[in-house]
Amino acid sequence: MKPAYYVTTPIYYVNGAPHIGHAYTSIAADVMARFKRLDGFDVFFLTGTDEHGQKVEKAASEAGLDPQTFTDKVSADFRDMTERMGVSNDDFIRTTEPRHMAGCAALWRRLEAAGDIYLGHYEGWYAVRDEAFYDESELFTRDGVKLAPTGAPVEWVREPSYFFRLSAWQDRLLQFYADHPDFIAPGSRRNEVLSFVRGGLNDLSISRTTFAWGIPVPDAPGHVMYVWLDALINYITALGFPDENADRWRFWPADAHVVGKDIIRFHAVYWPAFLMSAGIAPPRKITSNGWWVVEGEKMSKSLGNVVEPRKLTTTYGLDQIRYFLLREKPFGSDGSMSHAAIVSRINVELANDLGNLAQRSLSLIAKNCDGVLPGRGDICEPDAVLLAAAAALPAALRERIDRQVFHEALEEVWKVIRAANAYIDHQAPWALRRTDPARMADVLRVLVDVQRVIATVLQPFMPGSMARMLDQLGVPPDHRNFSDLDTDLPAGITLPQPVGVFPRYIEEAA
Ligand code: MSP
Image 1 (cartoon, rainbow, N blue to C red):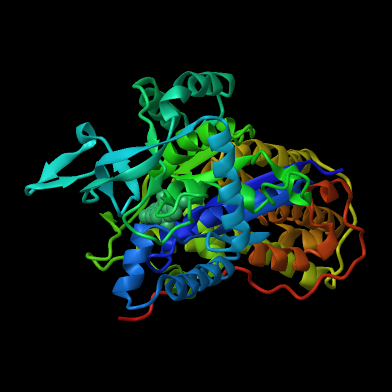
Image 2 (image 1 turned 45 degrees about the horizontal axis):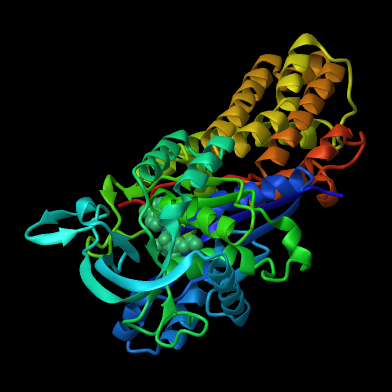
């Protein structure tokens, strides 16, 4: 039986159109899911939309639509973005679906049965944009307006509310973090969470009464669930919760929740507390990504610089953008995207380094070997060195993908690509054609074998282009898992006519 692996994206608020920040989190999770599938795991990969709460209700009313019609429309945009980004999710959950709403009610009852819910009165600050409660001490004032640390405006709310006894969970959470040192990644975020929890936890308001767009609290007319409680539960309702005999329940606990750094507190503090209270194991890891800014500026509707994923992929190509997003900055850090940076990655690393390597070696096979793949010949020292570097890639990437250092994973592959380019320059197979055709064939075979490993391990990052590259290398579609690398390609197969995989990006004349 294959081991189970469960990875999730955050579920996206449907208050506005998808932007590149959403696409980024989804693509990173997709790389993890695809990598694990190729590495022999039974993967479940979930994404979806977060459709309740005041923020979405407000956006619907501004659009002049009832919330359900509005969320149907925006959720469909997110589904479309997911497909266009080549995201290989196994399910797409919407929090307005009956399966989710029923699961939320069941979880509420568990928290209640555990004695962790009580009725009270909330009075304090709330930021609709963040859908978050803030303590007075966290706020700052700009131009006479009180703002949350995120810059979101806050309003004073006063309403009857159910509370979750979060204060009682401080010690158990600290114990949990101590027992699971890898629970929060990267490490800097872990320290942030630890100091927040060590500072003491207030009970958390988990129902709202001043609006209606939410999941009704069982047997409590007028109360809807706090949207973050509703949202977090998606990770288990998608697996069939409360039916713990459901086929998908085998995927729990999740191996990784991929989340932005802005929502780590909800995932690393509230979520494990809710789950432990309900008698359910917490997830294994919360891994958080940094933010993209554009040409040095924060993306915002008012600045008009919000990057639409669709526009990027039509301008530069899907795999090019997937590659750029994971190569350009460390996953946990912030980074800036710019036209110049994208073009440089495409032209230098994809078109030149990888594209030319493939083109040069495959066109020599087409020309000098009638397109027939040579057999493995005698192995000389430089061949052995290069082959060994390639053979080490799956393990090197496995370790790095498990730490979500995608840029380092790609750098490992590029070291081998650069070594392969140096090898081809040195061996000069084009010159060997006259002097030593047998050696030429051996060199070309080494190059095919090395590129086969490269293309196999790069599939999670650039699935479409690497499928085309593997086609050209004569690797059958059902032999592209990491374990297939243990079996040599048969000699004598005819390779298809080579075609460039990565065109250079050429600036349009002004
Ligand atoms: N609905 C909540 C998540 C609930 S999960 C149970 C939410 N949604 S969101 O649509 O506002 O944001 C989703 C994700 O997109 C977050 O992880 C956030 O960090 C990420 N990003 C939003 N803008 C971003 C950038 N500019 N750059 C990178 N990621 C950013 O929060």
